[in-house]
Image (spheres, rainbow, N blue to C red):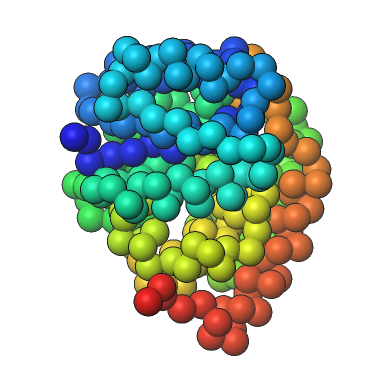
Length: 245
């Protein structure tokens, strides 16, 4: 039994899913993987199910009926993890934009250094992004700056989607009350963790944009994130952020 579960949401990831699974299972540390698939029409789930025969009791899949959004995929994964004995729960993309080797860095930041939420950060040591056009880099960087200004949260990479949570964080957040389901979900989870008093740390990583498969990013995603932080700030000021009972 591993103490760590990696949640990977998928939608049309047939080009990369087997590669990312094998890369994770080749690491020195033992991880388990939960794939949350939103009824991918390209056969992603079938690839995972085939690999489950090889990686018994290490690889799992949760299939959903349609494309229901990033946030709901992770929330389903969090609940699945909390029903079991995992101490550390990770968010990770399927497309190798997050280097599997950096999972060890996130784990050590929590397990060894005693942090509650480790964030794989593109901006803590400058701008560490590969294969993005300059316009997208600037949009992401200044969106994070805007989020810091509004929320007062001391996180450089507020939209980062590569993270390790200690289970105490997830069990303290009222997951059914999470409001945002797109990439603003990433901001909301960090903000709630911070407001509830958990210890956050940013771990430097190099983010490499996908070279295979289909990107899910667009300007509407950033618009949602930028507008959503105002609501977060108001909720924080009004004392509406409370621990799960």
